[in-house]
Image 1 (cartoon, rainbow, N blue to C red):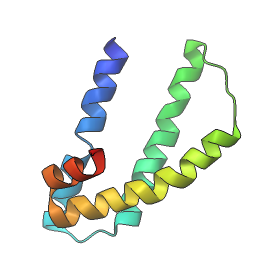
Image 2 (image 1 turned 180 degrees about the vertical axis):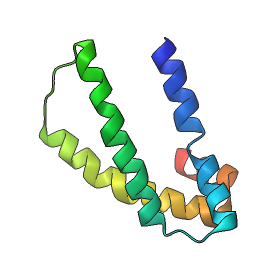
Image 3 (image 1 turned 135 degrees about the vertical axis):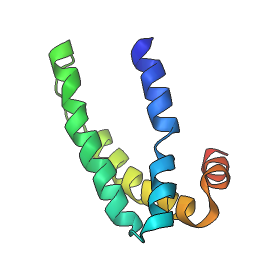
Image 4 (image 1 turned 90 degrees about the horizontal axis):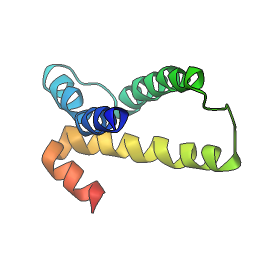
Length: 92
């Protein structure tokens, strides 16, 4: 339960720094997505010591192929339309 609550809070607030960065400097959405992907890759290794086996599947590759352009479009949306509007659009 604790991990689920932390994940919900973390995923729900990832767009706040993106909106804040936009107000100070102009960062390309693909660069921000690269940072986000790198952090997800680095933190995913924390579950291996918990007993989760390392397994690569074709569905994981397909998921990554959809996740990167979709999340890049989400970052672009946050920078242009705002956080509340963008989350409302991609969640519907």
